[in-house]
Image (tube, rainbow, N blue to C red; front, side, top):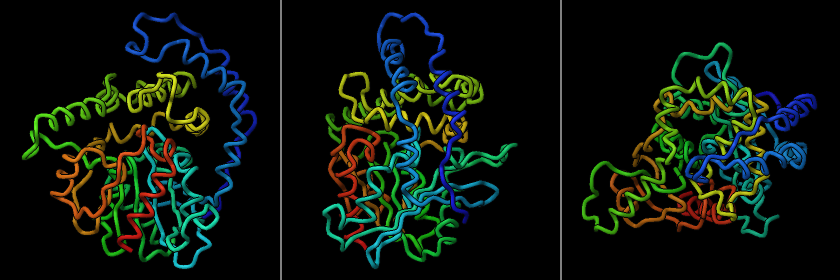
Length: 371
């Protein structure tokens, strides 16, 4: 383990701002959001990125947490490791989502690790380990890239080795989106040490009609499936031709920003005037991708075929925060030792960013039940 601190050269920040200012803006097509991110919307956000957004403030927020890097299986892994002042704190590995980064957890690490300071019961506290997924942020792929696929199983094996190196014989796991794929896989691979697997949202949509589902429930499932698939068809394209998009991501920060904003739009309904995630958090993520050159490599869950339904597992207890539909709970119960199903509090797919307090509550409730 080597200590790590974010310190982006000022020249890189100046270059980013200059590139944003020199964007060649195109004419607006008819149709508004149905044709993609509107020009006026993106121009306003880009102007703030260039002349209002304070990267150094966000860098300082991240640097307030101890950070490290280590090499596992030929890959640099960056991680936040924040120990609790409370005795007997449970180690918890938290895996972020796509398209996101460890900045996703900025609002939840404090209450989880130091509940007393945040007015919460100190009887349940966590030592948080939040690694950057391979190919994301400060865990960039090596050059030349490793030809072995970064499957979800390979990530989970890497996480198990990471926790072993940190000396944790017993720990919990939590994840959202891509992290919700890694988390149950980690439980399958390391059940001797993982005490519980907690993910956000449902455990996936089954093929065909769920047994005993009403017409209303089937319609709800179909609506959810359509929303998760995304109207732009980005998933199949990333699975087939990620290198083509990589040139735009690597040369134009605004091209990358447009792509990220479109994902947030499809997931959360952006553009309505009441975005659930603060724009500084979105721009922190966009800046991390740009400054580390990982906007393209972060799409590996698609081109490696890793994006899909989480594995079912009953070797350790499972919990779901922001569970939602009752029919989804019945589906989840079939192949999992489901002991916790939280309410759907968040208006956002990025729950740690949009609704940190309910997420903290759900994490604390689940692990209090099983520890």
